[in-house]
Length: 347
Length: 282
Image (cartoon, rainbow over all chains, first blue to last red; front, side, top):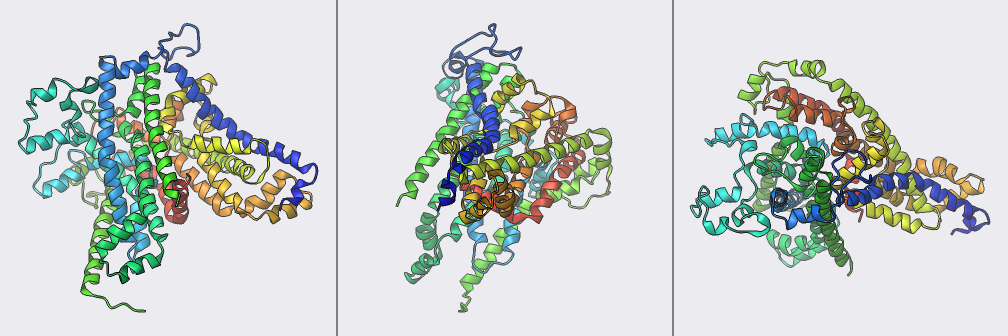
């Protein structure tokens, strides 16, 4: 098959061409992806303030203290970081299941046999995913504004909508209060007096704030379309015979869904969930445009906090340390995905 | 084989259309509201945010966008940066993709593995490091800072490599026997065959660099180097950010969305293919 290439001379030529062709890409990726990681690792061990070079001799070397400040050292740095982790955990816990379920539901309905206007629906659901995150955030700012569309809609239903972006109350706190279990104004001492990493149990149990709920809504709205496409592709890969066999066996539509379709969609579900996990830990643009971490730090996420710590507070070391912790979280998510997918591929 | 339509099946179909209709509204109506409100006056937008009809109809917001903001400058920057990045990515990614798919060279496996590994690095954690490199190279606050770091992308190399692997070897060999050099074979024989993959890559690159936001935050500071997303973000969070001026902000966001929207509706299937390829890259 490679007879022509094996002739003398062409191979050496090919080797040079191979390196030459990949050199520009390697240079760019090396210079702007690989090298920076090493530089940032160094900066995360220093107290560099952005003045001059981080490698100059005057820059204080602080070892792991930027990291220990985030986890073990009592103080504002740890409190803010833990609040951002809490916020992002709730963001993940609400957005990922919601976008996965919605994507699956839309794919199942769009994929129904004999449905007309399929491409219209597919287009309508996918379009938000391709638009600019900044532009979409502006639209959501308006939708959820005090005099915005969502509150106008709620007013038709006789509901007085909240001031979405300035409401720091946690949804779980509100739910507990609404059920009469706990008075949010006077939480039980058992919950407020202690808790891990410098936040009380009561603070950990806040749920996403009302403001964060709008950003979760935006995430679900913009990503469901992409994940729907993944599900549609997987649905189309299910052989027709499988469905026919279950029809012969007398399974009804619900039984078919639960016992046949969903198990066959498992690889797609793993993909969607892990892509969702990786994406939701990186939420940045929407936070920057819509809330900047406000109100009361309830929309602060590690990605935004890392940026803010470095570029607004000029604590580059601390900012870099936060981004490495985030890096680690995302790498773990990715590894879990690879591990699960590899497991699934084997018969 | 025609199926008898049972009442249940009909009910199922009706229900499907109701569900799809509801969600179409949820997914499309925000854009309708956006467009409508950018043609409203401020009091009208505040009083009737849901109404799709501006009353009175006014283009004042757009006049203001072009007169009192730097919108034309951001637009020009966005066009320039997007053109350069898209051209660079399409050329460099296919060059590398071709080498990885078709050329025999020592270290090819390592290069391929590196590119796949780099694809997994989350962009957001690289903001500080990118800033460090840009200042280190002395190109912070220049067009080069906006363009160079994103001139090649690992996912694009991957897409091109997958495509080139499917090209039959006999075609290259014919050209080689005719005495064409490696670049020549790539450029005039194999690349023209890669049109579908090239279109997909062009669209993905266009879309991602047109919409790129966090990179511009750490690459430049000077307002004259703002691209559209940066400018629009500044309109919202900056001095005009205090809850008013919605027609202006929505209008600016609308204008920034139009190019991607036009290309999306014209070339949808390439977007869909891109989404599928992006997802199955593992």
